[in-house]
Image 1 (cartoon, rainbow, N blue to C red):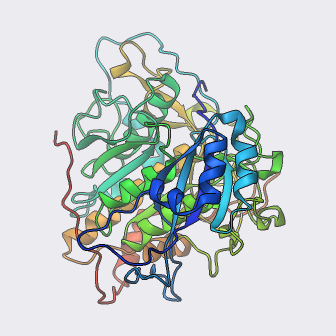
Image 2 (cartoon, rainbow, N blue to C red):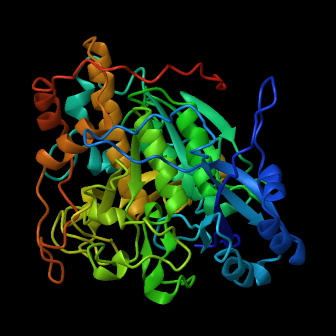
Length: 499
């Protein structure tokens, strides 16, 4: 797939020097003032012609109950640490990172590789146009009854079962917002700028279609067509990061809404090398700023669905217990969960039923596809091949606004299937007048119900990617959910485009 990989970024976690006395009136903290308070830090930046772009405060960890600790009132004794993106020539980043690690108030200084969409390589190539778009929904076998599909048809028979009242934000690169099957419940671009690149655009369009393609008798039908979906791009200014896009999305969502992270990064197996085969690519939360951004969203009651990645990695491997040299001293591997658990739902890629679209290439239904990451932290699987959705043009070509595909793949195709299933459940909860599922409840339901993973020729079930959702079983399990009374995060007044 021809997708721009962007540039590496140097992320620095800086402890602010507490001011001796606060001036009267509102206070505004900037990264420029941080550097000015710390001559050693400022001297390094000046020597390299670099500057700091402020991102957001570091997370404060999770309580035993799983909630994010609320920040205490700022004090001189406990100055916050703030993530910053270093603005400098890319060739100098490694040298700058090494120098910054000697600054006493720098808790972390690490280089992140450029993010990529978590998809097997696909090249957009529009086929012949049709006079009129037919109904492709009979090709969407992932909607069918379990165990082959997620039984979306059962959910649709329930009040609210197409996701009504639920908002989703997809964090990635670009989308074809004018596609004929995205004219309903499309909140549009809510943040960032798109790169104008067909690889990212078709990827995002395929994801969006899997979720909310209109129920209109043409093209495909989204799993949760009554939900609303907005998009936030990771691209924009030089100091914009994918973690900033995740935080931005979290602030636009309410408890029970869903945030989808459709990205993965080259990991330490090949020294963060960008590779066409994506071997060694892992889920984004391994990097501290991404983890803290996801934890922030979960702490607001937002369900975060995160692609586990296409690197064919065992996320339980001891390799991932070893921090990057620039990570903060108290870093712990989030794939171990336990005390360091972002609260996200990690999604692996499973094989579709044999014979889907007359193909028998991938092994037994629900077996781990060879590229999918796996491990104890992977919560659920979706179809990782043969997903019929929007974009790419291999099923129908012509104008890009009428492109469809039979071949969307990767943990990228698996993740929106999980999002769709959860949106259906949340819509049913809302129609029942019940509180929406919490992130922890949603994760537990996916782990404890569904069609079990099966072994493949080279993929035993011990290489965990989890169960495939079964909405009939999930709806039945909703009746047993008792939501504790707790202080909810304040509802956000949405500033979204309406269509």
